[in-house]
Length: 110
Image (tube, rainbow, N blue to C red; front, side):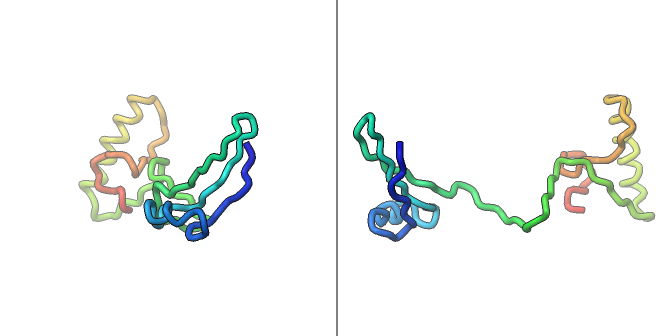
């Protein structure tokens, strides 16, 4: 198949699709299949959009160091219990926490 035309939303040949899909429409492509002798119209749509800061990659599931203040004794005790469970289950000395997991500490936004 060969792409002969790629049209932006609003150009001739895209108006009905713009009415149907609105701002989700990225482009319309006209492809030509020589073996079947068919013209095929395809579209590209936006299905998900999220905020992004260029150059910064943040994964909420990777282990991070957690700073616990002096006055946060209860949180410190919870982390110690979690760390002991983690060490005995995985036999690992890596005691960093994954902030994106449901660890019950309420530290996801730190």
